[in-house]
Image (tube, helix red, strand yellow):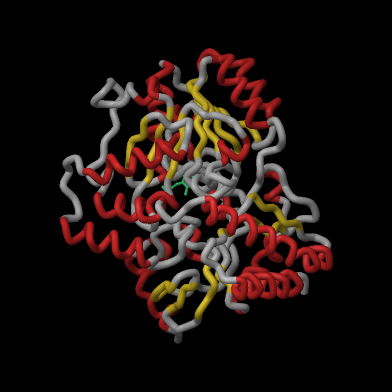
Length: 426
Ligand SMILES: *Cc1c(COP(=O)(O)O)cnc(C)c1O
């Protein structure tokens, strides 16, 4: 029995399903998850000593790879000074200034500890600001695990066939109106009917939690127009794509659409629990204690997490974003032959986020992702693992590249994934 199997045996007795977040259990792809012993740069090593190129990267958070020396140095120094005070610190100011400087639409920002908190508080802020209850959410977009957004959600919720979780009171889910991703007309119809009651739209401007699906031309602008006309708040959930895509790191910059509020997480914490939401001064000023809309957190703006975030941001500039695009394009080009050979596979990518879909054309919304051949995906995933490439264990997830991947590793990824695509068909 492997060390990972033994650990899983112990885990399932004391942790529901043996994991602390559902997709980690590998239920959608079969087999047991390797327990990870350590990470070294862009690779992880499991309890058995198997080494993988890591294309999960803590679900995109570790864009610089594991145990980056500068992040490590900043974190150890911060922890030695004291890990939490529940009082303001200089690092939070530096960090907020860095975020406001990088993202034009963000005049003010509030720090919290998870993407779930960021979207929960952004939605409350939109509701409080407008005095309205309804929000529009896109089917298959994932915004964390709180009640208002666990309605037709992607990621683990979709992987486990419970896109709308039991336990959410009907009066809450009834305040969440649904439209398919990339369907501006469906969103317009909701505004036609309920416009004066809609507090805002929340969406991933690049969907990543139903696999990677880019917005179609004009879609984000149409949503911007709907919000402007109805006086609703446009919230971009850039927890996954923020600081990852385009020449400057954000989807809003890449597509030239300005949201009212932006949610950030994952990358900004450099692997530590740090997330944020920010935007227009007029709206953000309504947050307590400046205004009446309540939001709080014991560990919010945690000094260790902020130090990791600052050390990460300081290493993400135009060179890194150019390298990410270069690697992404190389992987896409390298997989072309295998994709064409298989016939029932398509490839979707924005910069350093991509998904291999087991469907003949790239999906543009959640229903089309659901048509993918999940058995083939499972075989593809297992073959990748056997080829030393650690991929997300679900068709409803994106794959993440790092600017630190070497050319040799990019070649290994292309070879490993190509062979796995071919092997999936058997
Ligand atoms: C991961 C993710 C979240 C949730 O973040 P947590 O830190 O897991 O709570 C929210 N929105 C998007 C787009 C995400 O990818």
